[in-house]
Image (tube, rainbow, N blue to C red; front, side, top):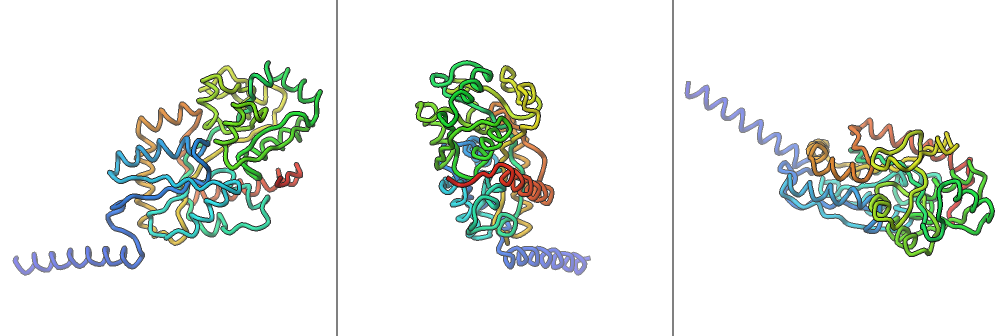
Length: 328
């Protein structure tokens, strides 16, 4: 009996050693997270990505006991931060929260120092929110009808801010111009946060923004929402009409945010990260935060998220060609 127990003990120890060794050989930490994790956010603080990254980070810390440190790296329409994240060590301790903008970038930027499909591992689709047309109420009072009359009466006299050239804010504006046959001047910024601040200050007239970053400003009366994209109203803002009821049935633009890891991140680490993402997503705090921003937290992970991104890249390539959008 003793010899049988010894053999079993030796087998268990050997199995544990092999498992630990495989993690070490793969470059992964079997106790992940055993130290703070960095989350690269490729836009300045105060934008749409931040609106989801910060509550996610806070809940991650509560559940794991380890910090999820947000590293805001704004610039080049979100591409600067993406390049930084792509070159980070693939050990599970650097994550990247990108957005729909990164599926647009390949069709807008002739040279990128990263490849979204080759340099990253898709982990999870974190949030999906509709785009919303918001205006400075002092500069453009009235409803959508009055807005359209003003824009058509003075082509080129009004402008819209965006998070940068090639972002969804930019392309949403170009698609709107294409479908309404209007001309509005594009003003790119280094992120949605700075663009929103200038909109509130009256330095730009309007934005085609993700509802996540505009939500609190709409509720506070600092900006006015005239339209949400798509065929239905958003339940968090039921008084804002949707594009379809305003005569734009094909104007459907969503802003989405996703989580990636650098290519080469061990599969064991990916699995642990996704476990924590699911735990965080199921918490009441996150459900409340997402609802306040008019967002959904879809259950789309791994290869399914990768396929979603591939389809978005193809879709936005078609929009860029049809609209003739260019970097300013």
